[in-house]
Amino acid sequence: MSKIERKRSILLISIVVSILVIIPLLVLEPSLARGDIVDITGVDGCKYVLITDGDTLEIVDYDGPEKKDVLVGYYSIHRLSICMVGPMIRILFVI
Image (cartoon, rainbow, N blue to C red; front, top):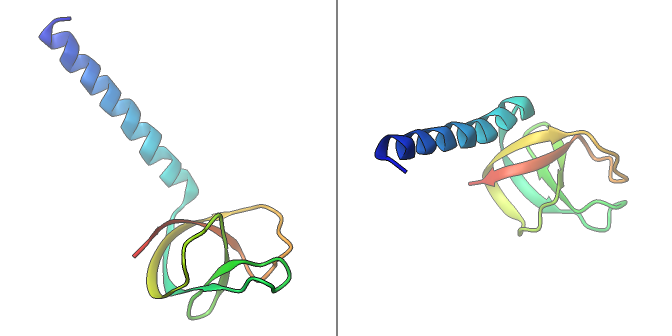
């Protein structure tokens, strides 16, 4: 493989990876919120929730510890739940 072909391959791979990472984030409409992650296990099928100034959001697929005063990146998801404390979210990051 020549040097030019290698550079083209690297460029193509970079473009494909960028598209695979960026497009889902644009479609998912990520959001930011500051609040507390609280474990409310035992309340009608609930587990972790994010409590912000005015909202309670049900966190899906989170196994981390409770945290106070954190910045959370998340996106909304739409699926059924027996918890029903608020809209369901999936966390992207916690700072």
